[in-house]
Length: 388
Length: 239
Image (tube, rainbow over all chains, first blue to last red; front, side, top):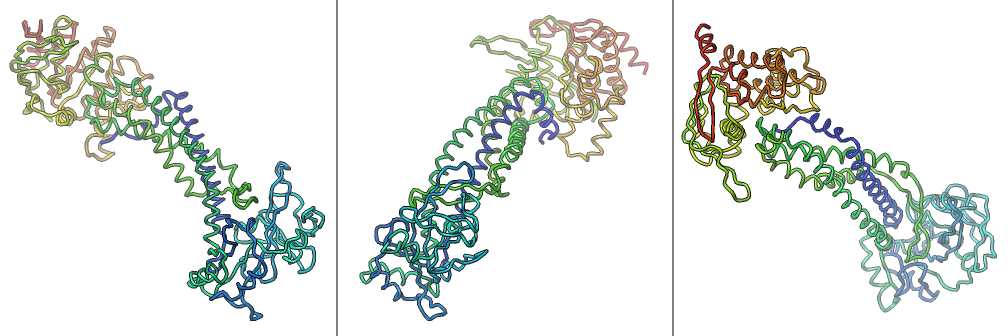
């Protein structure tokens, strides 16, 4: 039989300062973990969730990202013969040639500069990227007009409808922003889209960066990739979701790095809990001996101190969640070391993340209390009573 | 539960300090009848408290046998002794040893948490025990809101709430003034005479020992002599 919870709860406040400091230490770990997980989840959602399962992304062999890839027109022409390519309303295969470049913009938050991807697309681009929904007006092919992704508009200066953004090798061509688009929260929302021919002209590009081929069935991905990778074309084909998943994995490296830091902090918190619980055990040796005299088992004593530590951890978790809530909904961006452009994402604190933080806090509490609880259970009854 | 008798046969107990054997009890033989109130007296180091701990199952003899009621304690495991204590013995300490964060009622309730019992039944027993010790109106007070005498009454209520066979009191009046000591001793007397509890009380105070039916004097780990309190015995016979 275990001791009642009110016994544990009230004992937490016998050493108020020690308990509060321990709560604070664990709360910092919890808050850091929540923000980190939310950060990772936001990045995962924005990058990892991009791409259509029936889209085949084509880069030149050896390229790791669209921004470093080039596809010459003679190679591009071969792509229309890709087996399994879906056909558009005009009877032509759905092959979207795209030019991807970067331009420097200023962040709204602190005016620092950020490299935003600019994607030149033809009309067919909106058929292969059919999740893209434009609010306002679509740009006109042949005009220096652009639409911006929702995330880009909310993070950077001068990207509102009606604004003019300078693009081109010497930033000499001004494009009017005529609309804003959404793309189910994917990485495209961090980009500026404009007519392909105009972007190619502004950046003096005689080649494209990538091609996206919509297949009539995702099951035909392997055959289509074999054709593109094979001797007839000699380009590199990846399913579009897989390409973005790989980008996401690379962007997650920073998350792992910070996670290491959180683990170090959590280790410190374990020692803080241990210190608090050792003090609690030493201050209550006679009480423990009395409880053992009444008939409470060693296990009941261990459980009592573990429950107390879990209560401290639970309190700390609540404080940590409260401290991290102001970060929820914030929009930030990160610079990919692969694409060399920024991707915006939203920090979202989900119930799952809070549960993970609670589990981590409880783990810190229980590990920290393990040795002190064992010491409590080993309290020699007779000697502890005599000291009274 | 009723009262239990206590029988010790050739009990030896030694402690070790720095690998040096320190004998405390040296072949002690003792019998305390069911329902008896016995006082243990003797100089410091004579083995009084050690004897109490052996009878209470808090410690085991180096040699010899300790029987309380039907239980042969020296052959029981530590976990069996723990369970046995919760059902058969009530302890009263000199320093009360109440849990400071719990109310009087919650302190008294503690031993009952080891039993499968409805909450209403627990509360009824707690109220009864506190009423017996005269603290029925102090149930929600914390130990720091009680006087020393009241704290000891709560400790006695905690000792009797499970209706144990034996009450073991280690200097129960050692920290109290004369008047309060008298009240506590009268309470122990009542528990002995009215409820038939077997009581073993360690004390240095001859006046406290005078409340017991028999005083056992220990010296150097053996029973040196014993005195029967004629007044108490006569009163018991009369009742």
